[in-house]
Image (tube, rainbow, N blue to C red):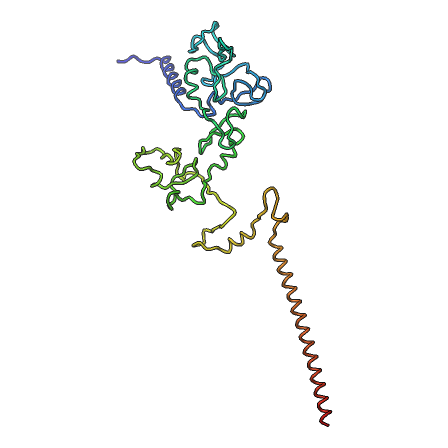
Length: 332
């Protein structure tokens, strides 16, 4: 029979399993050491983990490795390629590799601008697996070297975002670049949506011919390769334009409705920054007042014409009576 495990052996096995899970689990971009929060020793400003302060360009007293996240190098437990005389090393002795020929500082990642320690694994793998490779904000198009804050991923389209634009972008990310949920290739209702391309696909056009897709996994977008999601499981809006022809859901065909024309009249066509056409803001009530004034003028003119016609008729009657009197005198 196998030997019974002791309590100490069980604890050691659980600890090894827990460490193995920690090493193999996929961390988010916020939890990566190269994207840690750092406070400058000189100006006390919060920023991303950097070799030098973004604001005052000061070298940090206790740098953090951008790959493993440690501040102290242990000579016995670490895989450091440089043999240190002491049991542990901190500061620039852990990260600052100095060239013997040009005396230049080394071990700074070109992508995340963070120190990399002297560990063999960190030096060999960080340059190829840096999570901030080609990290450019989807809104302002700035890289890591052009702003001081941290870098984030959008929860919907998974694009890189800077600290200034992350909330504004994610608030408007679930919006399609179309006026309906119809498939871009046909007139069917789109079952799945790509939040990176902002378009919908039906079940027929989202699948490519000749490819086999595994069951239970999301189908990649045929345009960009990003995983699509079911439209009914997300809160997606369609883009609506306030100018041009507008249609109602109750309206059939391609005709115009009275409500559309009324909405067109009530719309404010003022330009940007408070400007408007001709320097005067349009008001639909002004046209109604002008129409009422024109109607009053027309009524006054009609009354004047009626008075003139009555005067002419009275003059004719008087002349006829005079002619009758003169004719009677001549007969006598």
